[in-house]
Length: 99
Image (cartoon, rainbow, N blue to C red):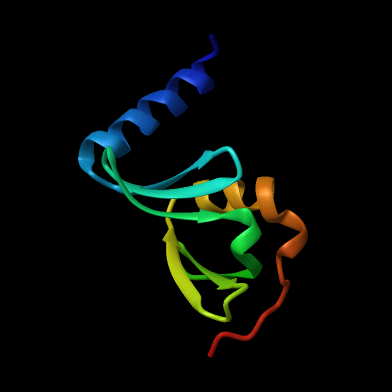
């Protein structure tokens, strides 16, 4: 167990206890949670493409679904970007215009 791993685990636990929004993988599903509550779930097959809009201290993640709807999720700790890269990395659209 390294110091880096331990610090990462403590931060992970602290976010959940604080009730912060975070994202996890459950198989091919990306699950949005606040604290320990499950809020929303998207299966990787539903994602048409996704893109990142970088802001100062967080990223806005634009996810366009196959039913032509879209959602915008806030990613403070890069856990959403990591999850999307793992299950839908090929669907990332680089340099998308959001404004």
